[in-house]
Image (cartoon, rainbow, N blue to C red; front, side):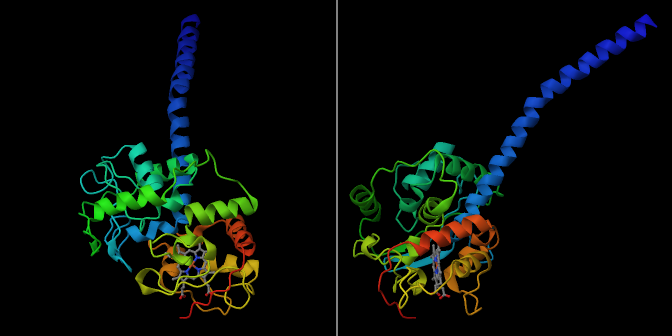
Length: 300
Ligand code: HEC
């Protein structure tokens, strides 16, 4: 009797000890998946990083052509493949690629990769994004070289960055709500200004016409004026109209939006703007409603 009691006692203590030992592992696992889930959401807010997935191609394996006035650039392989993707890069190197436009080999990316926009992404969000990128299947696909007539391309990209890119001071955490959250998502994750703002001859954003449309956009697409100007922008759209466009892809006249905008919303085949929470889409809509209206007619 006494003996069974002792054995039972030892057994129950062992059980408690083993459970306690397993707990940190389980907790770690729980935070890991929370981090990845958060990263997946950031990825969706960034339009599914759609430029990195070729039409009907594997997610993030690169190869989508982007026609610009400076040549045709191809989205690169950002899968965890160690040879052709970013599998061999450290987290810090991937974060620097996203926010600073640098590669581990010391070269600098062209601003077709919107690192100037991503430079303001919070530490928390960019860390989560990198954790998510590591979970996407690796694809051994070599990058397609860019086709550009720009002379001394690598040197030029370095000089461009040196002249036009200011060392960013990204926040540790992103604003959680309100217009500030809308500004943060638009500017630093969804990078709306990169397509919707006309560019100067140096390829930089013409901030005096912020979001006023680009007649000469990527892939030759005319990108509309989305400032609140009533005549030439979207001043007559309601906040709900903007939310519906971002989450469902419908224009106020119930047509489907087209081109790259549709790609970012659908985020084919991974997440896209359509996965924005109602609150986040509303924050973006509120933010757009209060940027200065600019009279700038871009015709399709
Ligand atoms: C990769 C380029 C790109 C990015 C980034 C982008 N857009 Fe667009 N957007 C377009 C293009 C191109 C169109 C025109 C599509 C068409 O012709 O149907 C468009 C259309 C729109 C329209 C419809 C305007 C109208 O008058 O029909 C709105 C509103 C809009 N975008 C808002 C946004 C917002 C808000 C963001 C950021 C959350 C954003 N866009 C990011 C390229 C982009």
